Length: 142
Image 1 (cartoon, helix red, strand yellow):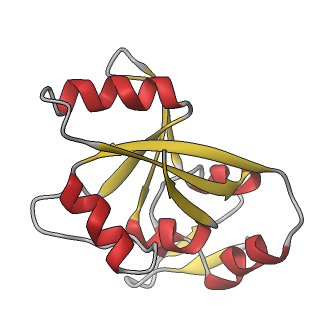
Image 2 (image 1 turned 180 degrees about the horizontal axis):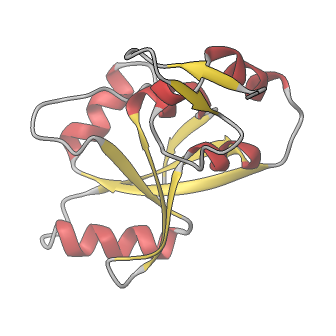
């Protein structure tokens, strides 16, 4: 018997205890995410390099992430500012990018997809906009 389960849109049972961070918001029940906003847990900052248009879309949507055509399904975040800058320099060679810092509860990292050494730069977490909009507490330009 699976204790902690959800049923996805295809009627399949998903064992939440065995689900490692997929980074996909639809894999988690809303009540799982809601508890993250009332917990008094340790916060952590993650960093993302992005183009001006993506940054403006976040600001124009009250610090919410939005999907748009030709974007990757998941948004990748570095664990430190230095790595975000390296990704910015790699993807925006003319220096035309912004770096944001998001604040999430450390416990929410378990819901995000994790890669130990992305693009030969460093560790990174990824999440889709559904998950990001459930776990991000603050967004700021750095």
